[in-house]
Length: 106
Image 1 (tube, rainbow, N blue to C red):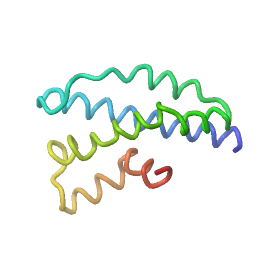
Image 2 (tube, rainbow, N blue to C red; image 1 turned 30 degrees about the vertical axis):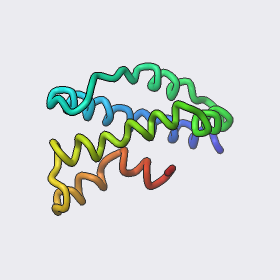
Image 3 (tube, helix red, strand yellow; image 1 turned 45 degrees about the horizontal axis):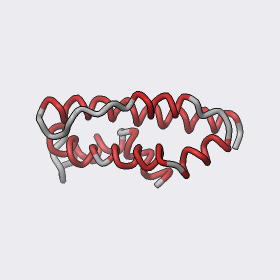
C-alpha cells in the first residue's frame, strides 16, 4: 500500500471516530448508552504509519472495538438522528463516514 493509502486509511478511521464521538454524546444525553472513552483508540489510529500497522490494526482488538462502536450508528443514529426507512436516511447514511467505512472494509 502506498503512503497515501496509509494516510487515507488513517483519515477514514479518524472520520469514523469523529462521527462516533458525536453519536456517543447523543446516546449519553438520551440515556441510551454509558460514557465511553475512545481516546486510546484514536491514539492507536494516529500511530498507523505503514501497511504493517494497518494489518496489525485490522487483525487486532482495536479494529474489533471500532466495529463494535460503529454499531452505535444503528442504536443511536436511527433512533435520535434520522428516521429509518425514509428518503432522508438514504442521503444521511450515504454521506456518513461509518457507512462508507463499513462498505469498504467490512
